[in-house]
Image (cartoon, rainbow, N blue to C red; front, side):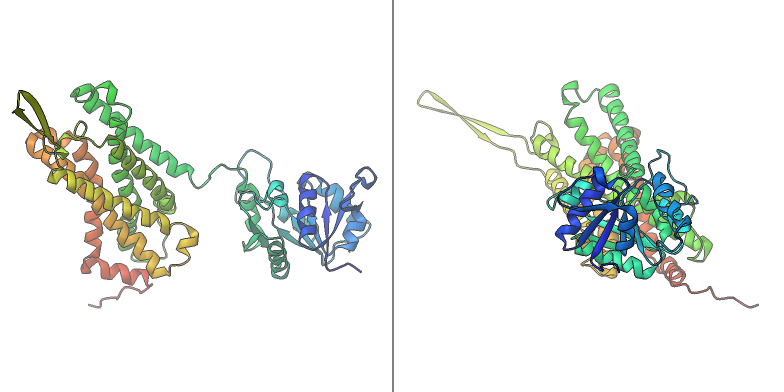
Length: 449
């Protein structure tokens, strides 16, 4: 008769001993199964044969590599087909191949379930390292994703993970293991496309700014390339990235009006664009924060001459002595307006970034979250456009020539202004009402002759 608090671990590697350590601390009786128990002396845990470990445990952690499943787990079924009847097998393996696993390829857990149909295979604990298992102060993720085709077994493993002091989540059927097994093999998989987009925007604006200000007009010396030019590139990249974040929602409205239904999928490029908006928004906040910090470092009449009134120097002669009185220049309306709009932009972006954190986003209901991400996001883009206009319009008025159209300040607001105009356009009743009906799933009314 198997002990209900006895948990078996097949495999005596680093992960096997780490699991045994955590389970023992959580009050479970641990039995470790090894192919050679005699050469595995360990004073802390009971190590026995694999067959005895299977027979005495209802829950088994499979802590061996997937290529050994056939010899260790499947081959014994020829002599004892009922060996795993009703037992929960927790598969913690990952895909070791370098290439990405296709969605139609079976996972290790699915193959194990097919080979041992009388067992309840559960995919879990494969995203937790052995270091986290043994240390309660490790800074790595402590999330356990649990997937299985057997609801009872899945719920039991979720409870087990929580008893082991981990955050466990229901990840659905065993098919999800195809994604979970490759999860630890990729480096920031959700951030790759947003990073490429961000770096492309930075490179394009850096190249154009260097050409216009350093090569063509020679307004900037090489001494100012490190901070001054970088700051300008960060400024215009921030407003461009904000427009990139909020433009896809406009395009989604266009396609829904064309399709006249919400059930038809968007084009693949738009679907991918919509899915990476959160990452793009956080990268935009990082760029904007960098721009704000560099601006504070450079804040002086020497770099922002049009932001300050010229300093006045008075020379007084008294008793054959010369006295200099310097009146520092205060900010002009341009400097104060640019600073105000910049501060408002940064504050709004900070609220958007905070709302993207799951712990804070979970405190908001659907309507509140939508208001923050949509309405406040549009207001943030308006503040950013106002910031650029406050700095650029006086220069445009001064130039009064076609060259204004080639300036960095003019070009960087074209896409954001187009984004805002489309936002306002779809807020008009003639467009907003059909969009609302489509998103509610209402069928268009048929007209009769």
